Length: 140
Image (cartoon, rainbow, N blue to C red; front, top):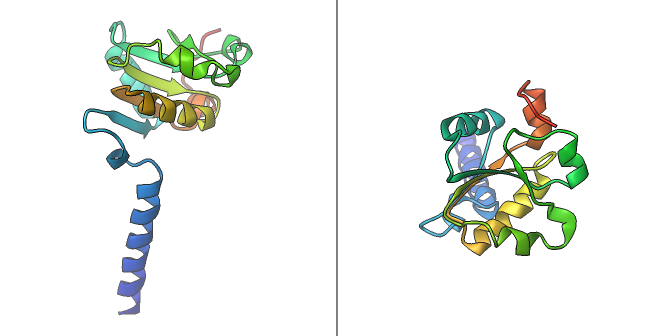
């Protein structure tokens, strides 16, 4: 009986914290906003290669970007002070894969994109560091 109570409490606490951490229920009905693994990101990139409605968005500084980035990525610096203005110029109906160094800035960027009404945005968990740790390629 004690184990059952512990399991129920764990489930309730998990549901509470997950619900507060940007769950899909926080998005509008016509939005897909979620965090994905680097393996899922790689598949997303491969599946959408060459498609005009798919954008890889690097939100690191230009200096970080020049040291290595995902192939085909565009760079809009989250820390530049005009990030929201620059991102608001993008087509909200396209599909976006967003990343930074470790996924802190990309998480903040995705929140802004969600609020701006972007339809489909994926945040690469772990950022480019996790990407490179998985042995996936970058370009300079």
